[in-house]
Amino acid sequence: MALLVALALFVAQAFNLALILRDRTAFRVAQATRPAAVQIADALDREAQGRPLSQDRGRVRIAVASPLTPAMRDQPDLAHELASQLAELGVPVRHVAVALASPDQYALRPTRIERRMMARDGVAPQRRDALVMTVQQPSGRWLVVASPWSRNDSRLFWRLLAQTLILYGAVLLPVLWIARRISRPLRELAAAARGYSPSSAPVPLAENGPPDVKAVIAAFNALRLRVTAMLDEKDRMLGAIGHDLRTPLAALRVRVESVEDDTDRARMVETIAEMNRTLDDILSLARMGRPSEPPTEVDLAALVDAVVEDFRDLGAAVTFEEAERLRMRLRPSLIRRAIRNLIENAVKYAGAAEVTLEAGERHAAIHVADRGPGIPQERLDDVFDPFIRLETSRNRDTGGIGLGLALARSIVREAGGEIVLSARDGGGLCATITLPR
Image: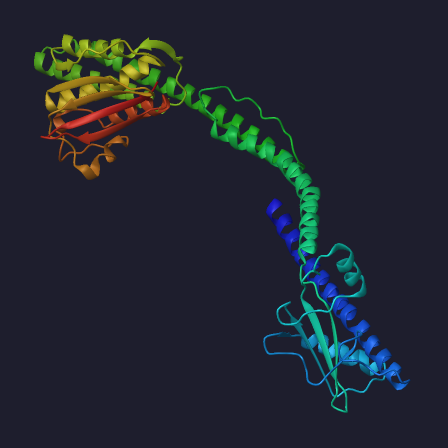
């Protein structure tokens, strides 16, 4: 809006300048030619009355030939206007020519006032450009009239510039102020949309601004309430589904104990445990973005060490380089689960895992490295999609349905961090969790 108004003002001022320059040019042409035409007519009248013209005196002088030279700048518009003025006064002419001359090309004779000032102050007159007007009479005689000519239009330029600045200040400042007041509710709406989080209760946005902006804000408030209600309903549904599925699994686990064959019983128990783990992963992934655990101040180094100790207790070959205490504010259970999923993948597919913690000024990085078969470079991002398993590089007998990495990435991103997979030199894979401090 401000740019359009500024452009419109600029165009209007450009037209204004063109009109002023045209009027000023016409005025200057008339101002230069009309006195010269009157002086020529008066001089010819005096000559007819017996007062002859002189070559070196008076405003109108006689010249044997035209004093104009090719170096002078011809002024055809002034010549045409002077010829018209002489025709109106009844002065017959054969040819009229006007040129603009510099002080070096034509020296103006000082006026009476200038001569008096020269005599009084003893200073030379100022050198000025001259407008030389020549008229050839039918008899062939040349009449010459010269007058000072100023080409300095800087005052006009500065006046127009000051006028333009005043217009811009008088028009643009209120427009900018009004536009800012109108756009403020839109900026607040955009900030509320970007900052919307399902984990926090929605706070209605104040309905300010013009009627159409108020309508948009009201629609956004209603939409946010509907989305929150849908997510609440989804959580309740997931809780019911989890409860309904765990009940028959628990009953099935009890009945498995009656199986006499130890091998079959162990396989059934492992299948039921895998189903419970899969159900937990699906429910956890579906509930991401609305965690029930509040952020707390924890020691990240101690948290990682506790996860590693759990795997060591199970006999897994997991190493961890001791790190200094690193206090961070996060959701410990979720971060522990993300780290556990990465270590579990490394143990499953490589038999061992190397865990390190690196602390920077603004970020903390957790590295989980292995020497397993790795993942092709072009598929490193695909494994984060739910239910994706790369059968060409991972053994299908290790179990899982492809939710571990998807859940880990969702947890880390919900904490404001990122998780990246990269190939190791010499083979293997390195998973890096980066968390803001």
